[in-house]
Image (cartoon, rainbow, N blue to C red; front, side, top):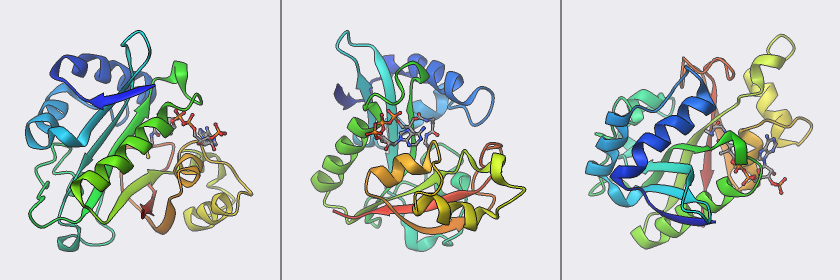
Length: 200
Ligand SMILES: CC(C)(COP(=O)(O)OP(=O)(O)OC[C@H]1O[C@@H](n2cnc3c(N)ncnc32)[C@H](O)[C@@H]1OP(=O)(O)O)[C@@H](O)C(=O)NCCC(=O)NCCS
């Protein structure tokens, strides 16, 4: 699995994967992806299979995190999805705004390859840590029995497995806190996210 910087011609394919992953919720739009390439090209990565087909992407930016509330939502942190909050002069943290893998090849190591590339980027840019808001996409099915905090604790203790948070934990991330209304349109997570951190 090769991971390389995203190119303009990859964008329609990324939008298609995003639609397949999220259906109508939280789908990346081409003009947002183009904005990422203009603002922070090095932070945009795609995974390509041996035939050269794009099968996943990871989008990152460097916002000045100290300027934001610890409970800031995805839309605020990412400049409404356009990465206008990117400020490498002041930011010290690589912020993971999104990672997605073609549903046809999920569970085959593509997400892990994208994260290894993100870790290399962190080192190349001399940044201190990676922070991301991990969706808890299995939570809606447990919401009648558990609060979001309880659910995250169970996933961390490996008593429950979550399709997205368990992936982040498998990459070596630690949970810092749980934020409500992080991505309100994410119905599977009921809008909640676990803010997670990775340090080299
Ligand atoms: C989350 C996602 C990026 C993971 O990518 P992937 O290529 O499927 O993940 P990998 O194959 O590299 O899996 C790595 C490890 O993560 C864990 N993992 C992955 N998917 C999992 C799942 N559905 N349930 C539990 N653990 C999972 C496993 O520990 C796995 O290791 P293993 O293969 O040795 O068991 C991908 O499933 C995806 O695009 N999901 C939808 C979009 C999304 O929610 N993105 C995350 C935003 S926070």
